Amino acid sequence: MVTIPFIEYPSFTEDVILDGVPYRFSFNWNDNGEFWSMIISDSNDNVLVAGIKIVIDYELIANFPGRSLPPGEMVAVDPSGTVQRISQDDFTDENVFLVYVTEDEVEQIEAGTL
Image 1 (tube, rainbow, N blue to C red):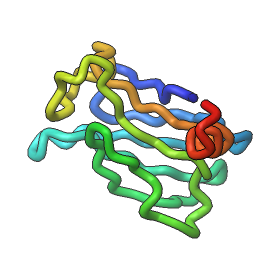
Image 2: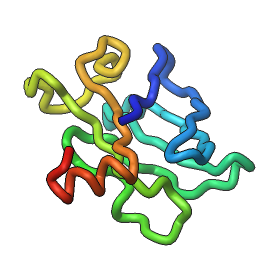
Image 3: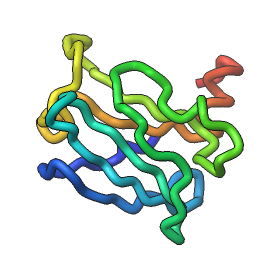
């Protein structure tokens, strides 16, 4: 499992390697709607998917097959179970974490061996 890092800016980009492949994540806070969204690009800055709204306990990338996205699963998790809606500071305050479950881990979970 990989935790995607967040910093205290309303708009920023992170380079992350997932399942051995480099990706570029751009995160943006929407003041009007009060939510985070993300863009995932490849290492050449080709946008693979854009405008994904980040919500609690929902698999964020499975609905975009065939776009060369990471093969695992990505979910925003709240370990305390108390966050109903993600605020701008929830990631940096460590109330919520954006995690990537690798392809191998997903297979182990599905097989009941993890």
